[in-house]
Length: 295
Ligand code: NDP
Image (cartoon, rainbow, N blue to C red; front, side, top):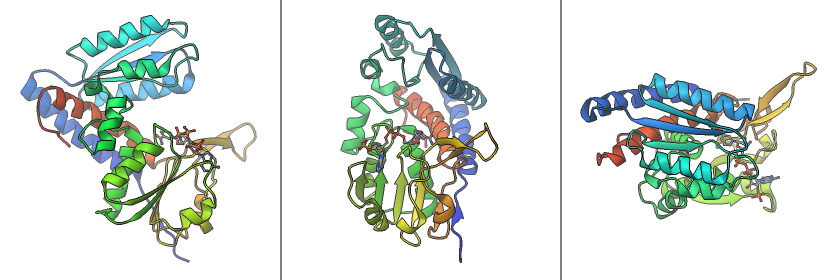
């Protein structure tokens, strides 16, 4: 039995970070200022706080300016909108990221829509989404773009490949499908109402799983030799009592003998997400300075 390759997302993300650091140094030398990323964190959600801290550390490590705005969970819609307006107008800020989810009383969509699309490093504003759908250059959500980069590194030209994306969220599934379509794949989007999911997945040369269901996709569903990107991050009970571990949406143990290559969880797509956020911030800085896209 031959086993498929595990794609080392951590190593690839490190390469992206190195390139971003080089680009940051060149931008800073030519423009006399560093690219800047502003991150807004509302409330005390521990997972969000961890993400924000690692984004802050990475931004500084790559030579960029990091602006953090921590606000209490009871901030009003008006106050939050004012903060976003301020950041839209701040010339030191190239990228704005509002850490989601926001507390329930806030209108998340209204906040996202207010972000200047040229500073939309999460790629979630309707303008960014529209640009992606039209195949125009713009800022693209980090996780799907990171997944595409891993696929292109692994497979080269994706033209003509059958790709199945499982999941249709605004954050992952839909932009992933658009990116694959723009890369000339034949794309199927599957979701919770899809009939015969196993049969649909079995047609695919490329499977992207963005579901949020632990180890749902089984090896037997996968066409032998397919390449699989497992976006899922699911916390499940570990063998040791009281402990948990992280698994993806694909049952790697059964899939590994079917695939040509697969991203592990953790260590696959996860590290790419933050690397692409850094890339997007550098990209936004170039866009705003009227310079050609760097990476
Ligand atoms: P959402 O919950 O927003 O979307 C899940 C999608 O999966 C929906 O489109 C849903 O279909 C579909 N789905 C749910 N159940 C089934 C099923 N039984 N069969 C087929 N499709 C199903 O999640 P996200 O897109 O935000 O995230 C997906 C996963 O990726 C999560 O585990 C999340 O933690 C992870 N993630 C990882 C990131 C990373 O950096 N690696 C970043 C972002 C997310 P329907 O639309 O019909 O409800």
